[in-house]
Length: 80
Image 1 (cartoon, rainbow, N blue to C red):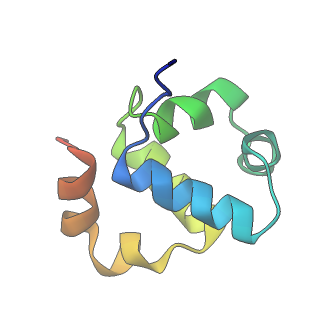
Image 2: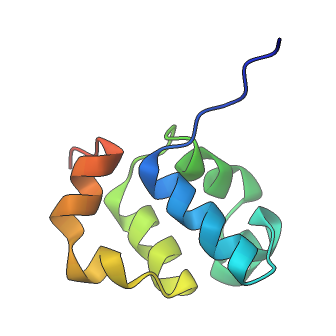
């Protein structure tokens, strides 16, 4: 059995928002002016830059980032 890639808690929230909005990673990347690979890297935890996560969260209307930034950073293993 093949192991799938594991998403971070923040990455899971992003994927849920994308599904709710009927968008792909590529759609999001184009919307915010980033490379597809950057969005993918954030979802899977290879890119943990606060600024990048904030841009993605804001574009998707993720209130939790703004309301509870410490909780989201903690869940994602984020260290700024």
